Length: 217
Image (cartoon, rainbow, N blue to C red; front, side, top):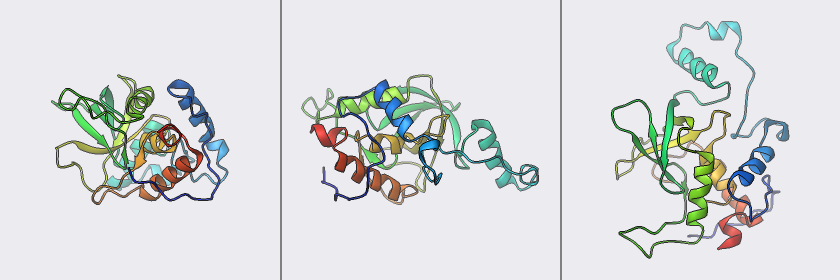
């Protein structure tokens, strides 16, 4: 993995390096709650006021679709996101979702890369912090969790996996949270760059604070 450039700005997410699982997520949620961001600019767990009556009664199909998504979640989930349910988490950046179609979606989270795990085909492939990254994603996304999923510019990778951003019901962008906690490095693939600046900055912050794998590997 390439070492990111260190940045001098204050790290916004403070957690004890040894924390994983529920405790890590609890600390993360507290640090990224809307009350802790006076400018309201955080992508994670952010909320906005309800739209005016004139906007909610708009006849524009695009606006109506956006309103429907926001009303369903109660959070600032981007327009175009679709509802799905987590069926299985394979590793730190790969999972399966049920979106109501005939076949479940095999999903590769956009914008990040986690350490490899060993497999039958590659028994020696396991990398430092691979297991911890998988367990953290499983804590964020237990089987049966209802989520919102969003595509970027390219819907699939070369292996046929769906490329998606995944949001919790409270608005947490899981892709970004994994990088912020040091469980993944930021990775830009192809044209999928919707949240690239935020992901890259999150990696720099986690590296500077030696969070997750940056302090363990």
